Amino acid sequence: MTHLLDSQTIQSRLQACTSKEATFKELVALSKQLERLTDDDKSEEHKVKGCESAVWLIEEHIDGLCHFKADSDAKLMRGVLVAVLSLVQGKSKTDIQTMDLVQELTQFNLGSYLTSSRTNGVLGILKKLSSQDQ
Image (cartoon, rainbow, N blue to C red; front, side):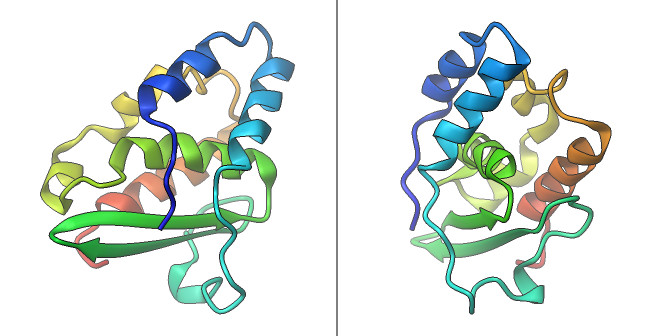
């Protein structure tokens, strides 16, 4: 199970960035928090559809709460995953499904940084996080 920084800490770190280059460097630094998945975990079953980079997302339930493991072949997306997972880690599935994850993600100021294809990938990640069939 991945233990991440809380969303407020990540928000502060990303909002302190004054350029796209600084944001990129911060996302790469954040990416180091994410534990790497095993090759067995990087299966088609866990792969997120619609991402430009390969992204895998695994959901586990412990005491009624969702815990996620994720990985990507791109450092930038691994950093984005840290931000996204900080919003949902340890919450119930019902809580996650009632969250406006797109709106929640705006607190990280990534919109102007992510390309349209990366934005589509992030939307795919958000869809998988809130889906019924995990």
